[in-house]
Image (cartoon, rainbow, N blue to C red; front, side, top):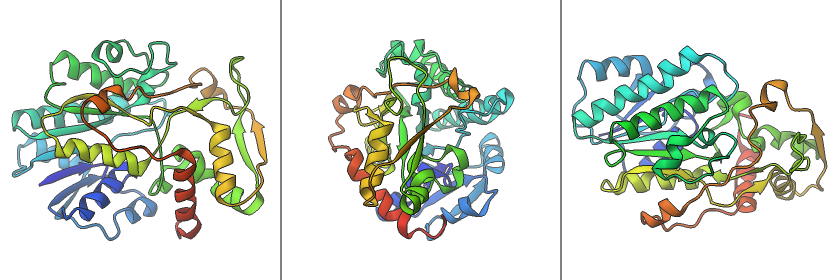
Length: 320
């Protein structure tokens, strides 16, 4: 039995689809369904049980789960603008800690989602070694909640028993329910396809021109492959980056989207919301050495190919 939390969410639902593709149907799915778009991410998925996240937490606390071999914990609030510290503490940190402790007590494989948001402004670099992870200084409450659990896992000596995955800028199918937290590709696709225009944030850093801010964009299909690598290799543990190792500009992303819909590039640079200006990451690039040394050999999809694949998916998707 495999538990997937956040199973109706973006990465979680893609993990469930891939598990089903591999013949895994003995699954316990956990999430909090509050809108129709999110529910649609579970359409056609095969599983044995579904629990609301609060009900599932009670099952864990009452030790009522049996025959679980792995917990893939993707459930969390991923908003980078939400300012509810108490909610992040309970939903992201305490929930993850409870699940991790239960898994350790029962000898269950535990894989959880951390985030590149923990790296903050990048002043400590983007290496996923333990020393760097301890020194990270996030720029928002979401990043802080992820950082707090990473540090707890290190302090408790659990990183040789569990897996933490620092996802960088993941994009791809099944993110439609995320509102403003959707990727730029998802948010901009319809306008680019219909009007041939896109809006990107201006830069307020003299080292980066407008649209030249850089991110390590990773296609969700690649991110899922990394997760399943750790499902299949239970002896490999630790905190790992999940990116491509190659930073690209927002202009690169926009140009890839224009090419995918066969439109000439037309980019408008707009003001960044004040809430983001002091918390904005101008550069992220995963150091992938640790994951490669752990034995992960699959190549990562080139940005242009990933955007092209996703654009083809979006063009026919009925939920947009």
